[in-house]
Amino acid sequence: MISDDDLYRLAIFLGSAAMILIVVYHFFEVNAGESQRQAAEQKAGGKTAPQTTTAATKTR
Image (cartoon, rainbow, N blue to C red; front, side):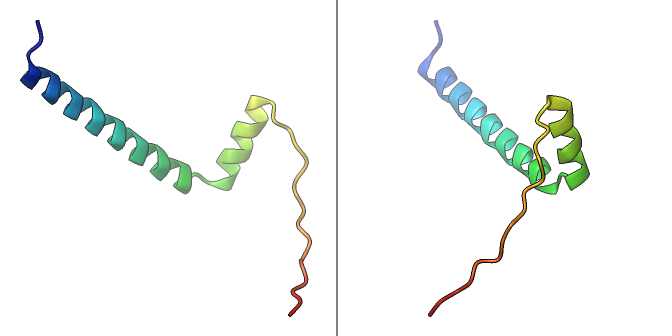
């Protein structure tokens, strides 16, 4: 049977590992180049037209 101390250590380890993986994932996602994103979208079949933005006028 697993003791309370073992369960505590396992929970701390798994929680820490999950947080580290989340931080690493976001680091790579933020630093990924635009060409890598486009290549990934084309490979996945998400061939969408480029988005165009229109300048919004500010009224005061």
